[in-house]
Amino acid sequence: MTRPLSATLPLLDLDRVLRFSLYSRWVFVAVLGTSTLVFYLLQLGLPLLPLALAAAGMAGLNLWLAQAGQKGRPAQRLLQQGLLLDVLALGLVLGLTGGASNPLAVLFLLPLVMAALVCSARFAWGLTGIATAFYLLLFFWHVPLPAGEHAGHGDHEALFNLHLAGMWLTFALSAGLITTCVSRLVRILGERERRLNQAYQRQDTDERLLVLAMEAASLTHQLSTPLNNLFLLNEELRETPDLPEEVQEDLQLAHTQLQQCADILSRLKSQSQAEQEPVRLYHTLGERLAQWQNLRPEVRVDWQRPVAEQDPRVRLSPLFWPALFNILNNAADAGEGRIELHTHFHHNGDWELGVHNRSGVLSEAQLRRAGLDQFDSGKPAGLGLGVWLSHATLSRLNGRLELSNHAEGGVYARILLPLEPSA
Image 1 (cartoon, one colour):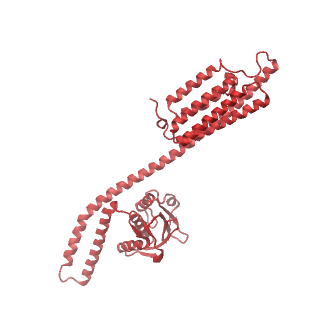
Image 2: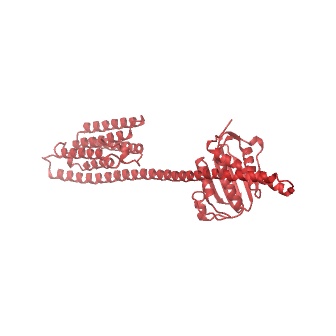
Image 3: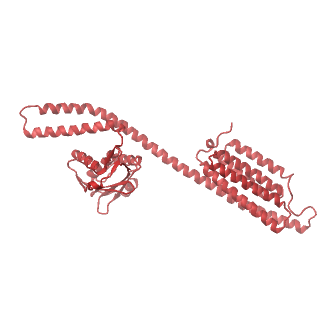
């Protein structure tokens, strides 16, 4: 059984290879038609009508192959049929123009090179056998070139010079076509390899995210028990009589913080099943910032909230908020407790957020690697696991994260996220 073409060289884009072979065949048809016209003008004793019919027939079959490719027929089958057509057409043309003595016989190598590169071994060897048999037949069956047995010395010398010129022309044409064919295929392979490398990197990122998600789920369940114990202890202490007012206030603050921790754990547990409900963008951002600042009361966030009329209604993935808070925590630690937040909603649906802390600076190495790799974090401008997770999350949401040194000092994190508008 013949192996499918896709199994022989899976890195190749067969549709692009088919288009290249169709284009090369059109070039051959044009050269053959032009040569036939030149033979006619020079009044050479060659069978011009069969050559013209061969060019027309090859053009018609190539047009049929192109239309069949547009209709969705398998590219591997069309490619094999086209290579077989090349060998048959070349054998016919050589038989009409001198047979094996024609220096253009070396062109048999071109379809064989293509078959060896992109077809199965069985088909390539079969095509090689057909081409070899045709070449052997050309020694016995062919139409001789002008200047026959009774030609004079001058005719034989002219014929020999024509043969040498044909050998040079054949070499130049073969070298150009082989170089073009091989270099084109190498470029196709390079592009496919680059796409595969990107796919492997995405897979590696997904695997790392999966491991972190499993660890987070495990830690969530582990934290539930001590958190419930702290709730019970807090309740018992609050019920203790004759407590000073300061202690009562501290216990109430501790109860509020514990409740926020419980809410966070609850969101973590249900986040995998959360749906993207339509929300008011800036209203939701304000609520989330308030919740975050309850956990980081020492941080000052300077943000000018747009007016209500400019608050679009969108569908926002719940995965976005942990990514944003990672950036805010990193900026708060690096910026000595002060963050400037800039927001802008573009007309094309992209939401832009800028997080600016005025302390620290990123090195050239960090700027090259910013958001792409996980490495040790060194405040006040370190980039660690949190930034890497934010970058990976935003990439999965079709957004991106850019880090740069701000002209006024400090580090600027630019988040661009496409959002789905909702009526």
